[in-house]
Image (tube, rainbow, N blue to C red; front, side):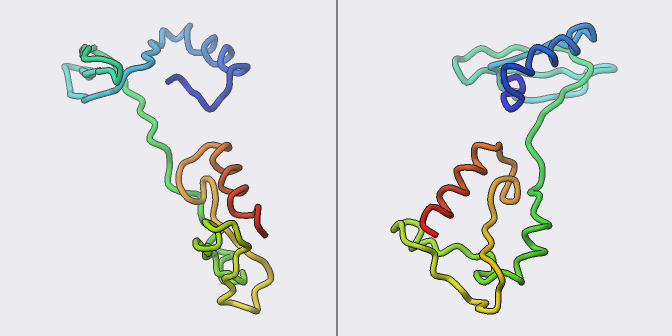
Length: 136
């Protein structure tokens, strides 16, 4: 996919900026391997939708596998929270309020969501939040 997170309204601007640079967009394909080839690279490209496999000589390959979690704020606040960042999974599954409070002196409840867990999009963060706070 080509930048699914930027949204349809912004996509045209990005494409207009990259096309004059002779960027080749390869969508709906899976990168199978990359190997040195002279002064460049040979990319072997397959598909999730059929047996097609091709190779292409390229200058660069950009693969985005997300980032490490942005969790420093979570860990900075964890000791100050009443639940020490823990989730009461039995209560979550049963649709009951979270009952964990191993730190009764804590000033707030803390839950780790979105990019603090792993590379996610905004929809995952909203869904995490909804599941965790709907029964507070």
